[in-house]
Length: 443
Image (cartoon, rainbow, N blue to C red; front, side):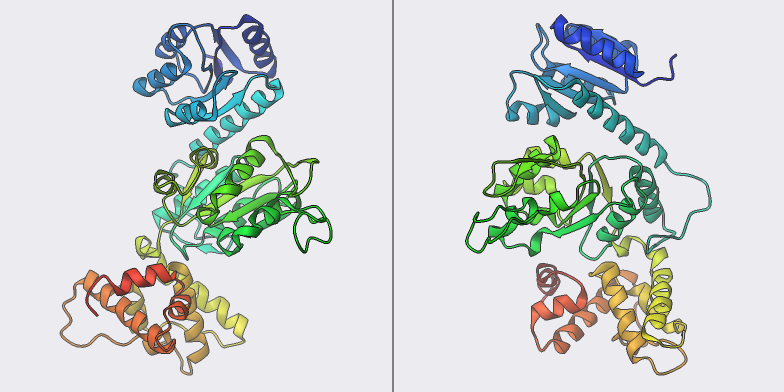
């Protein structure tokens, strides 16, 4: 069998199918071209393909039914839909059925080749991220972890960095999603180009479009000069959209076009700006649920969700807590000009029992506090703002963690004078998360 990537091309129009088949073969792909959905399903039953390019409108079994057949048959090829008749709604329906992308006729052959190449890169990256029996690396780009969950993250970073695939990073507040984005950019071929970061939650809704896409002079009150947006500033490099779940619905359509077509217009302008940008997004929520609730565009979600990376919460990384604490202790002592000090055994026990609602960010804040307050030979529990467990404790780990978390929240509220917003900031969590912690039991 050929070692070349295998492509199945399904199109009933000979004037479209034959030239595409010739171009794909000359590019180096092993191509099977068929004219009907029935032929496509039979071909998938008899052989394995890396990519399936399928027209939505076919005689007999249409493209959507081909996708359903792929799903039923367990075909894991990446499907790319081409259509001259479909709407965005039809394309979204196709993507629900497993299609990875869609192109609207007429399109440049180069666009199809680029799309196929992108998904072949993603497939290669996914294979390379499979578990390895090699000695795991404990640290990469400021992230520390020997746990299985973090080792998977490290492998994914290494694999996807070599591609131009759109990445979405998922994880709770404080887990280190921005560090993952930094690492992907630093290991990519774009590392010498800009990494532009945008916190979508921090932008006023009225300014989102001008911040992302720029504005011409006079586009709005106060626009006294032409201003480049973040997409334009990131040309050649990487754009990181943090907390993309907080982006209002209206500018999401323009973001979708910028990702899909690589072009946009500045606010108040008619000139089409073309950019080459690798997009990385991050979210702290389940975007699928937000789509279902009507708070996020479904078509944009599917464009973003090419290769998700899940960053685990610290409570799922028990083996990493002490390694992280010691890492922060060493780096912060050096940063603050303090002599290196070890963690006392009781402090190690306290850290292991704590559930860290604010994740790695909370742990780093605790160690920063300890470095500031520690005046002895080792870091004790009181330097973290905690207290020693009393005698006769039940030994129930979950209960101990819950108690430690409650103590930490109470101390933060006391230090903040009852101001929940300030207390949440001190804990490294959102105000909503703090409220959920406060209302989970009578207080």
